Image 1: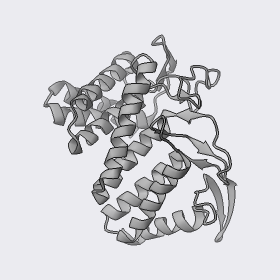
Image 2 (image 1 turned 135 degrees about the horizontal axis):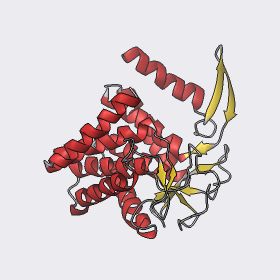
Image 3 (image 1 turned 30 degrees about the horizontal axis):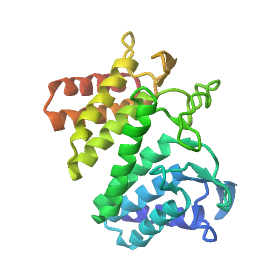
Length: 280
C-alpha cells in the first residue's frame, strides 16, 4: 500500500496545505488538478488528524515525513496552544489573524490521540508529555466543572458553555449535551496513555468514564448506545451512530485486557452483537 500512502501524503501537502500560512484547508473542491478552497478556516481538530496521519506514515516506514510531523506540532503550538489553560483553542481564520472564541473538548481529545501516535512513532517524550497534559486537563479538571463528565463546549476562558447549540441538539459536529461515545473514547485513550506512562488515576478514570457512559446511554429496549444525554441524564439525541458503538467496544476490549474483568468482555460482545445486526 506504499504507493497509496504516498499519494495521500502528497495530496495532503500539495492540495490541502497552504504554503503561505502553513495551515490546511478545511474543505476544497478538486477538479482535474485544479483546486478551489471552499473553506480555508484553520481547525485544531483538522491539524490533529494531520499530525496523526504523519505519525502513522512514519510507523509505516515513510520516514520522509518526520519533518512534517514536527512542523505540524510546532504550528499547533504557535497558533492554538494556550499555556495558561494547558489546552488548545479550536479554530482560527485562514490567515491566522483571528482566533475564534469557541473552545471544545473534541479537538483536544483528538490532539491527545495524535500525540500518543506521534510518541509511538518517534519516542520523543514531548508528545507523550502533551498527551498526558491534555488528558488530565480534559478528563479531570474540565470534567470537574460539569458533573464529573466532559461537556463538549466552552467559552474562551474554558468555563462551561451550557447553552451552545442547545436549540440544535442533532448538530453532527458540535452537538449539545454529553457524548457517551466521547466518554468511552477517552477511556480508550487513557488506557493507551497508561501503557507508556504509569499513573494511578488513568485506569480508574477510564473505568469511571466507560461505566458512566453505558449506565446512562445504553438503550435497554432496543440495544445500542444513544448519541447524547443532557445534564439531567435525559436522552437528547436517541439516534444510534456507528462511531459511538465502535469507540465503545474498543474501550471495552482495552478495559477487559487491562483488568482481566469478564464484565468488560460481556460489554464488548453485547455492543458488537448490536453493531453486527444493525450496522455491518
